[in-house]
Length: 229
Ligand code: HEM
Image (cartoon, rainbow, N blue to C red; front, top):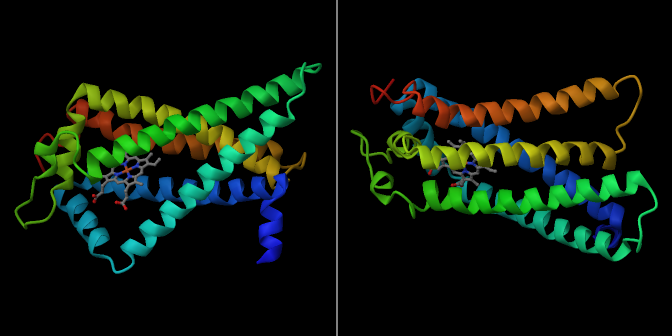
């Protein structure tokens, strides 16, 4: 335990924490997107999936774990950003240093915007602060009508637009995050660097396209036209 605390006191230790928690958050975003794909099968599939999740005995443990990972990731990011700022030389002599500083600035800024999106998203679909009329809906079996909530929400071009822009931001953050975690973990070899970079881009692309497909297909009338597809 003491060793872990001492490791967290070093900058490489904190970078490892960022990499580990970042990987877990990417895992969540991927699984969340795959689960939401139940939307393609219609209202019964999505509402059944949501009811199963809500009623799962481990749901609160999973939520607490996710919140913990999210908090550790954010607090560690702030501590590393402050450390970088303190360590910054007065004048930059080298181009690479400027590029590295810009990249880390982009990742911090996009991280703050992703945090803003998550707060907005929880307010929308978990707490019903926005469009409360759609949040109240129940289906014929008395379950929370998540399908109606999501489809009605995305039928608003404004809400859909906010989600599409947010997914591009999530993609931007993940793209820089994946590059940085590969560097931290020291995964670097001429024989597989190109393949690894392609796999990282493919994963981020899949997350962005998959998540954008929900609002875009609702706006096009492909999802939700008949109410149960
Ligand atoms: C267009 C893409 C997305 C859709 C359609 C979507 C949909 C949903 C829905 C319907 C819920 C509520 C589930 C329920 O109450 O049963 C939810 C919860 C949540 N979403 Fe998303 N989501 C999207 C993208 C994201 C992204 C990119 C993130 C993270 C960066 C995210 C993080 C969360 C979190 C943390 C929850 C709360 C989970 C819980 O209640 O325990 N979502 N999402």
